Amino acid sequence: MCAFAQIKVIVTSQINTPPDDTLVKTRVGELALAQGARLRDLRKQKGLTIDDLAQRSGLHFNTVGRIERGVSDASLEQLYVMALALGVDPSELNPFQPANPPSQLSSGLDDEVFVLVELLDVRVSAGNGAVNSSQEHMGRFAFSRSWMARKGVKPAHARIVHARGDSMADKINNGDILLVDIAAKSLDQDGVYVIQLDGHDYVKVLQRDFSTGGLQIISYNPAYKPQVLSAEQAAELHISGRVVWHGGEI
Image 1 (cartoon, rainbow, N blue to C red):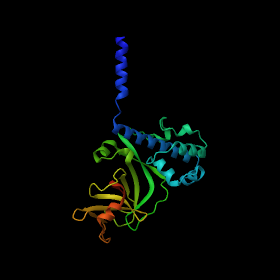
Image 2: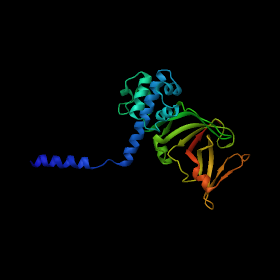
Image 3: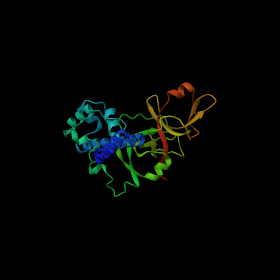
Image 4: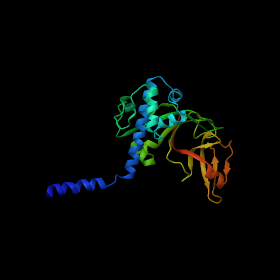
């Protein structure tokens, strides 16, 4: 009786102890990315574009793109209709299954040391604005996990996009790639951000004006004048993420 009572106490203690919320959110983000990668691999194996899969499944192409990027949770109904459109069993899209080999770090990199970040076919304007309807995955770049941790960027929130235009020259030039932390949706510190204005995507310096509660949208290129937003306008500004690194040709 004592042995069973002791076991019962241990089991009850484990059930009543909730998992760490941060760990749960991190793991859920990783599962969403794994599910999106699995969906993308299956779609490409079938020779389909995001638009093709959207039309076949009856979903909006933005919905399919967001699920593939792991930024939106797919409902069971959405997973089911996409599986039908791909001609696969719905269990193929189960994020709790081990990922398919193409979605793994097949380059020989140690996944305990490096993380592969998706390069999206997205152009953010360092000029007059860029419109992005679909967001295809173009490849991956490897970054050190420890470096990203020092930057405060979680792998699940990292994306890479291209800059286009000359308004941020000579620091960010046309064709440069930008590592963006999409978890940074508010202006907690001055810096370089990807923003949306009037349906266009831009990369700009955001600088807060503490005297008015507004902010300035600044280009590195002095040929482009700063844009001043009032406090009301600043509150409506959509921030897609903070740029934490950029790279380009010499």
